[in-house]
Length: 98
Image (tube, rainbow, N blue to C red; front, side, top):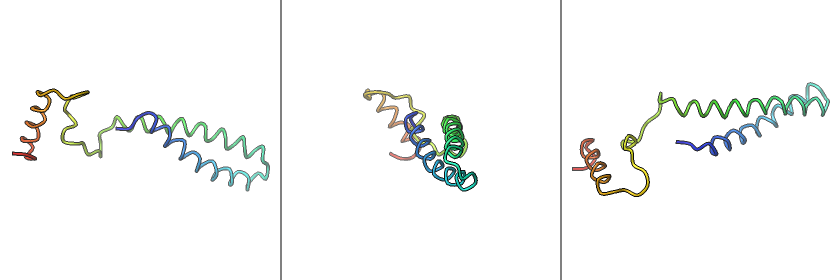
């Protein structure tokens, strides 16, 4: 599972690569620094936001994802003895332990 922060950092780093690429193309076509800057800023601002939401939506889609065998266990915080028993029972049922 990815955090919102990780999705945002991925979006930012990908956009930085794209900024240099589109900036170079826009400048080569327009030969104008102001036009290049406006085109690049608008395009990448929109794309960064769209990419973030695209990532967050894909996190909700299970297709193609391999789940950890214990992913369905509802355990948070410190494990109680009954939590450990449930984990052992699930691992035993799946053939990981005897």
